Length: 256
Image (cartoon, rainbow, N blue to C red; front, side, top):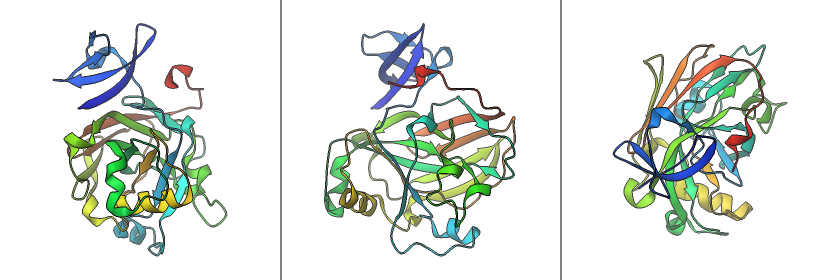
């Protein structure tokens, strides 16, 4: 099942995606091009895992982390499919990061890796947009590089775990203006999703709706205003967002 959230006719809607059509809980159908896509859920926590692909660490000339390198991404960074991503002024190196995102389905603590997938509701696509200028020894955790408004496109929907299957050999791609920039697979994760859930749940309570962003493969490149970032993950679909210059405030419609 595909679960989505969207806005239409001044109202927020939740429902499913069936045969390419959005169907709200009351049965009303909406065409995808006639709505404003919202993040497919509104999480309490957005947990990122840095440097979780060895090839990505290598392209940045960084060592593989000895433990999962986790950080929190603010809720206000989240936007939906087709939303604009705002490039702040004086951004010398701004890039995309395609990531498989796991949605926690029920509250848990001290989960063992062997049981971890039992706590996953489903999966979606995340774009961990980053200003590389602001990632370094003096900017850890990397909030100033990854925490800007609109720097967390996510969606377009959640594919429930029963339909998605196992997350262990899933293909990830990023296109910029139809040019392939990233191509990897989750079989190359340094820390598996199960290990991430075990580690994160040792530190904090994971609650229903929390998102775990699992990391990105190599292939970073600078994006510019007007560029269209299209992220594809096998078994989910495609998340597309356009880069624009600007700092206008977000609409409150993006929230619950």
